[in-house]
Image (cartoon, rainbow over all chains, first blue to last red; front, side):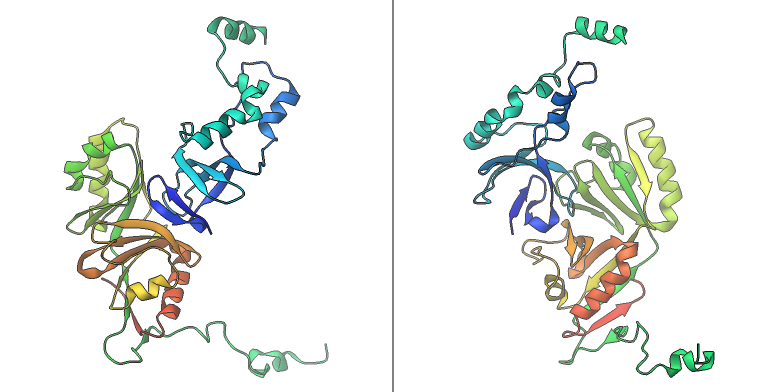
Length: 126
Length: 209
């Protein structure tokens, strides 16, 4: 069993937690044009790497807050726990974040705000 | 059917047993003599309010509640019979006397006005028990992984965790007693589990504390 260091409650048993799967999946904004195939990358496709993986966890039987975890899926070693709205700070965590195919995906590009001008035209076209 | 209805009653079925037949009694004496190792007392006459708000709004409630609401994780503010338990960074559980509920809620609305908060009475959703006795920690250790030894879990500390399969909140209170909060629907399960776990130490079930 894992012992997970909840950012609020400290070390607790794994059975108190729920795993929320892959972290850092940005939702494409509604105003940005995106193909169905690219949207499927956001909605359905999840990584399952052998090695360092960035995951979301929730302390469901404790403070019920979400946070992120850098975990090695081979050794189950937890390398880092960091807040939900931040990026990993350890070397292994940063490398895994950068190496993910999502950083280059059209879905993630569509999750960034486009300049005000372009957005206005795309709304008026509808 | 060949058999008549009168033959088909419960009395005529061999070894018929009520599902409650194996239920443990209200009081089980300590097999080694002396006081029961665990006492379980229902705490009644309290109102529970689930308060969702940030630390700035918590600060505004200090005068109304009588003590500063906890901003540190897993801490309890204690003032008289009132308790305020930290449940999350923006979530607090207030325990006040039942007869003070109406006035407290009115004053809370007056103090907070249009601030961004939610105060929900949850008295019916949550049952409170006060645990005591010399062996209470040994009983809890059978179903809860937390270190509840007074060295690490003392008056003013609280924690949310699991007791066997039930989600519970524990708060260390005065005179080495523990307050146990659980869902009303789980309260029968929790007391049955506690009784079963305390058979070797003896237990006593009390109505109010």
